[in-house]
Image (cartoon, rainbow, N blue to C red; front, top):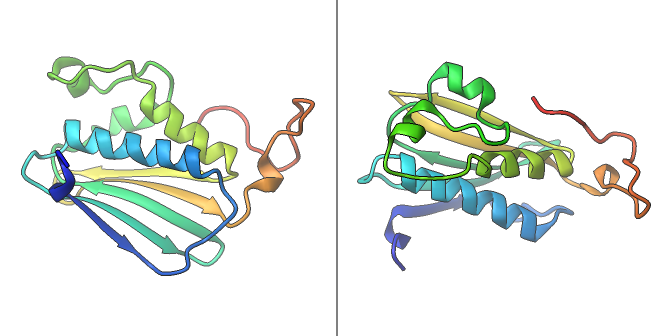
Length: 151
C-alpha cells in the first residue's frame, strides 16, 4: 500500500445506518486523497467514525497548512479551488469537495469544515441514521425533508 502507513482509523463499534456505501466510500476517498495532497507529508491522516446521538459522524483529519477562512466559504462549490491549491503542484478540477457536499446532502446530512494552523484540518460528514426519507422517488421528484441548494 503506497500511503497505508499514514492512515489511521478510529471507529466506535456498531455505527450502522441506512446509507449508500458506494457514495460514502467515494466521499471519504476524496477527503483522504485531499489530505494526502494538501496536508503535511510527514503526518498521519485520521479517519474517525462515531455515533453522536441523532447522527453518525465520519471525519477526516490532517495536519498541515490551514484552509483560509475566505476559501472555506466557497470550497464546496463546483470548480472552486483554494488559492494554495491553484498555485501548488497538485492539480484538480475543483469537483471533489462538491461531491462530498452532495453526498452529505443526498443522505439528509451536512458536511462541516474546521481548519487552523494549530490543530489542522477536519472535514466532518454528519449523517442521519436513515437516509431513505431524503432520497428522490423513481419519478425524479424530491421527497420532503431533502435540502436543496448549495451552502
